[in-house]
Image 1 (cartoon, one colour):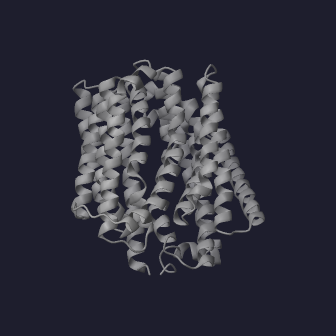
Image 2: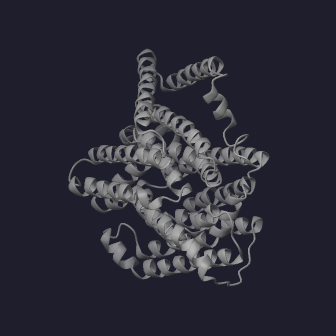
Image 3: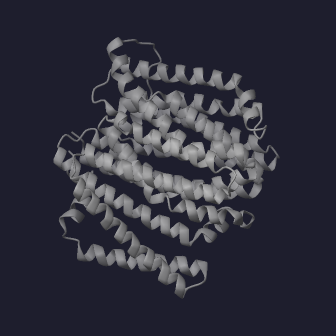
Length: 478
């Protein structure tokens, strides 16, 4: 039984957390893009992609298994902690001693010492995973908010700014991220302490292993898919080209990242607890439609305002990133569709059902880059967007199947949402014909959207779906 007040408080703090993280990310990228050369950003994109994949592998999925399980004991906690730490140390050793080979693979675009130092990040992150899991499981999002924002301000902004101005180059980014993770781990443990005593149990290990192993396999394939493009582009294109592509993708992925994170933490935990299938299915329909429409809106907003966003966030020196932001912003709705599907397969413990889709997505990304590596990078980017849409479409129908929703009805809902998206496109298109100034274009769109949303909420305020959405995760979950 979930307490109504706890969920309401958790939702408010999670929204606040996601909003503040988005603002801080904007500040970070605005600073780093202006004080560090493109070559540094390109090289760090390779390191970041490597660390990303290793972090997912090192976790072993056991922290998510702690969230998903309704009953846990001290043995579950001990096994989760030591398994995560052991895997992370094992992977760190592998990366450390293969760093020279990795550097050679990328034609020394990243140095051996840089790879070795950056690999410390996922080891540090692994230490705090159990404490983080308990903060999420217990809906303590206020503590998560404090931990993430304090660490980000100190590490990713202050440390990076100081070291970059002292000409530390790529090491300013690496050391900034290490500082961020150290502070985050310390604060996580301060808010959610657990014993370090080793406590083994075969049953508890099996409890965590099935969910953790399947979840990890799924996440590794999933995150490889999201990082494979950068890992391969870093090999076959220049670091400057990679930095331009990565910055365009970074900006385009901010809406799905923060909207997805806001929904993920609460939806996964709540859906793991809801027993009533009908209620869960109705919530699923509403959340999916709402999130997909948000994706369409942000996709078109970023497409039509790409030059403005690049100028404000990155600076005039990054104008060559505008075409990449335009094309990559079209993947935003598809990424959010897939994100909802990922939440459902985790909450319903059906990870292996999505594995073929994830492998297909990964292979399509790899093939797109490898086969067309001699083409223009913007063409490769367009192919990657198509891969995202195929992935999102397949994950949508998989989640419909898992939730036992009517597939024909799902198709109709999907095309209805696409039609609404087309109307949103027409609105952007006609406003652009009337207004040439970028700032005025953005302002008029916000005003028009606010008016339309207010009218719709007033007209449909007594609609059962609107009422249900207002009550979602607050009044009817308990």
